[in-house]
Length: 218
Image (cartoon, rainbow, N blue to C red; front, side):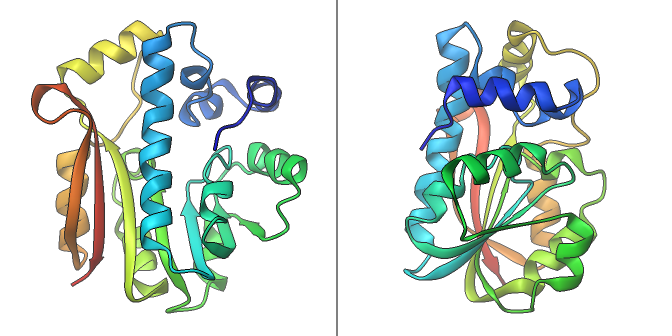
C-alpha cells in the first residue's frame, strides 16, 4: 500500500531536508519513473515479506518507520504495530490520516526501555541500519524482543556502482550512509542471527541496488 503524493508533500514540508531525504520522500515523488519504481519496489518487497512471516494476529515492530509506509501492509496480518523513529512527525501524520489506532509510535530510547522481551513476531529494519555506525545496541534489542521463531526483515543499499549512479541521477550528494549491505549483514550474523533467505532488487549481481534479508535468531 502506498502513500499518496499530496500526503508525501505534506510530510516533506514538516521535515528537515536531511530527514525528508532519509525517509526517501524525494525518491517516491521523483519525476523519473524508473527511480520512482525502484523506491516503491523496495517497499512492495518488504511489505510482502511482512505478510509472509507475520502470523495472523501477530505483532510487528517497524524500526526506522519513517513515513509509516509499511503500517497498513503490516496490519493486514498483525493486530498491533510499533513504529519506532527518531523523527515521528511524518508517521504521526499518516497514522492520523488513516486512523490507524493499532499503531503505537515510540522514540528509540522509549522502545528500548518499554517493549517487552519476546513480544514481537516480526522486526522490520528497512533502510535504517546502514545509517548507524555501530548497530550493536539495536541488534541486541531486536534479538531480545523477538519471539522464538520470529523474523528480522532487513533491506539495505549495496552501495555498488549502479546504486551510486542512481543516487547521483536522483540528485543526492554528500555523505549519506555509514555502511553497506555486506558489512551490515556481517554485523547481523555476529549479533547471533542466521540468514534464512535473501533477494536483490531489481536483480542479482551488478544490477543489485538493494539487498533484502530475512533472519532469525541462531
